[in-house]
Length: 457
Image (cartoon, rainbow, N blue to C red; front, side, top):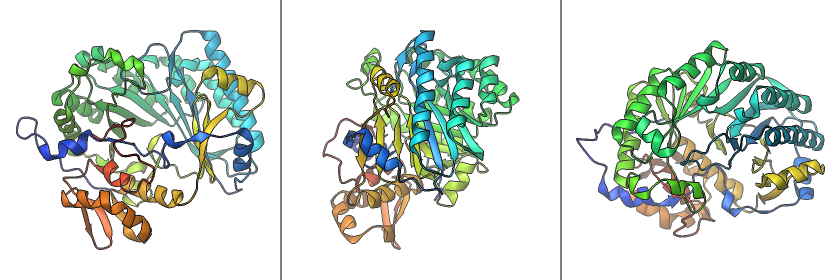
């Protein structure tokens, strides 16, 4: 169900409820999968081939292609990426992507064709115009695409000159997700990503002129030197440029995992109180501009397909976040890419050299994964519906699973974050930002006091 967040306070008038700060500071998974990636274990190629062989003729495919290169490193980045300007290295990687597509296409039995393609990174445009066109041709050579398939890419506006946009249009791009983060020059300097707002505006104009009609913008709160005013200005910028979908993510400061984040001083980061105020401010600006709040951190125009899916209970969540993609088979191509099939999750070798060596030897470059066992699929459905609907129909929950969730669930109800009644659980206005806490109640693998995940808000 779609429900607007309660966000009528101003920075000056009212600070977030101090009683919520402990919840906001908790370390919890983002639940883009269940079981989550830390619980993946080694998986061999023979097992994966067996899993993929179970693909059904009616199964639509979704493709995710990971391009782990950037010309420079943004200090806030939590992605699997590397800095390179080596044309030879990038060309070698692009050729290996085409070969991996061939290997996967040969393994799969008859299927329903590709319904969605998502290019992520890193920076997919690192492949260059010719590389993008070659990649698109290789994918279409080895996989049939459904008519009207969505083709989306995460894009750095600084790379979108005319030749690049023409190449993206030539490969059939239908949706562009622009990494905006924050339009404040001060904040941009502190995160190592200087990107004038005017440059983003020009990129939007060029994309639309090329016939790429779906425009998303990704914003981040909780960045160094960032206050409520900066977050509000960035959200207003996205709305004023007619963006169809806006994602507002909380910065995840995990320098023990991403050592380049040590360039960001801890004392420059907003505390939990300010982070909550920033999240509320972004929601207020966007909902006042007519956007519908979706799930935890997305906003969409009411006429957008994502808003319609959320309104009808068809919203989905996968490794790319909230999506309308309901394909039962997701294939991940590239170093570290994650896929899913009916049997479980599978992830490629994250080491570029290891991935290249496997592909070059004619092997699927699998490293690890997770077979679904026991209650995994039931709990996965419960968690996905919570994350997408902000509510849960208790008829979906077996009695023993609900009983096991009670020790974590009852405090959320007692604190007014979750309401129970009429056979359902629902987030209250007070608890709207704490979806991950409700989802965690049904996570059988989450260790107490886990610290390898990001802050909840």
